[in-house]
Image (cartoon, rainbow, N blue to C red; front, side, top):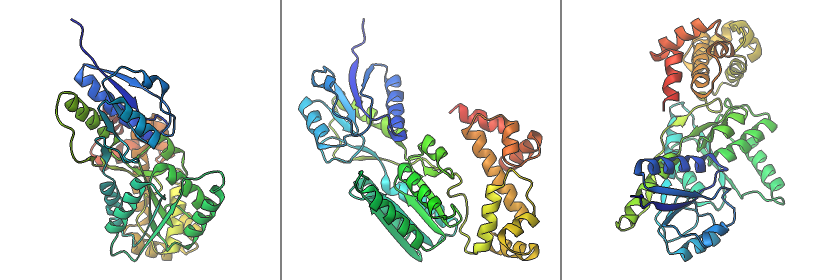
Length: 382
């Protein structure tokens, strides 16, 4: 006897990592349910409403509703709809990431690294960005300073003005600054501006984005730290809610907010706040030369201090010896490469300044309790 399948259309963009994660979550639920048939309209958020849906004979829709046109077209279908974006006000149930919890997680991360100056770079007119900015400001209450810049989504005519505004804002920020950007896309813009202004990241401005869009985070310079917003769970919970509605349950009266599931720290924020500019210069040299045979002499020369004075000021600023600090950064970079790349472990050892693969295995096991191979295998099995 054939299965009576539920025909569900997905209007979720594939151009952003957040959209792809939502689709993965929906697909996971659909596989578990066993009686769903998915119809996907590929494209970006601003894409036009797909023509095939005008005559589509389906049961329900999960959509990231970006504009009034899409909202009106969906309302005309008279089908159950779940919104997984929350940008456009509508009558449909909403499943969304918890913007306030995302912002609080960034503030907590920076507070643990002793920052006292905080900043947020967002998009004017976007409710989700404004929620993150407001929650971040609230979470940073009591800091010495908080700076906010929100610029409009760039058009051809406004791009130059927005860029000049960003550069001027960055130059005038108190430093070192703990910067949250509303999304990974904006994070790339900010890191490019820091590079143009010769501002050192993370020594002068530490940066964390949102969405953990791996491709965007890895191509930035330095690689961008980012919060996993929880979009996979958004997709899963949206599908679960829709299935319940199709089964006869009433739609919820309030939005379902999904909490973030961790922060992926990369080089853009991998540093505690260091007020001593010469120590910060030495730390930057360490970060840029981890693969090399660096010594106290080469680092202190790069910082512009004598070896003895640099070691003294370094311990005062970081609470560690130079040697302890270097080993910690090398282990952190090794773990990132082990987890996020397919590089041979021998090459990971070289890129992180370890003499050979065996020594890499020894220090990683001592630091984590697991071998590099075990760590990589665990990540692949997730």
